[in-house]
Image (cartoon, rainbow, N blue to C red; front, side):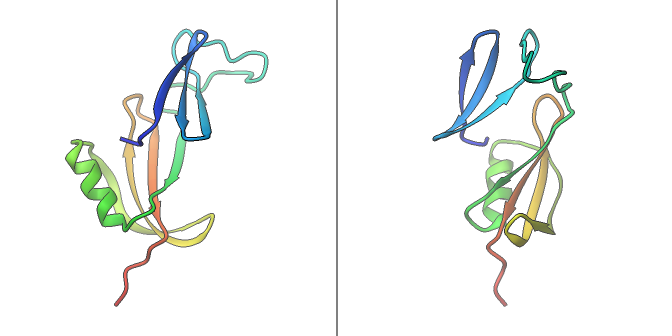
Length: 105
């Protein structure tokens, strides 16, 4: 649903978004010595920028039959004021799409 490439890496996985990589500590992974403790399933809260209007993010999630936890709601993000929609990954971690394209009147 995020458009990442899932790549097996040793005993774990990484998610690649073009040139960016998100390391995950799934079952059987050994993140030591860098990560002291693996993140428990459901223990993450990640925000991703949605380049289009937030309504398109809602349509995208609904098309994939992903339940929306909350939103769209106004939120302040790293780039300023935006609109967010919240949902969960299969482990129960909270994910957020934020759009900085504010609706015009």
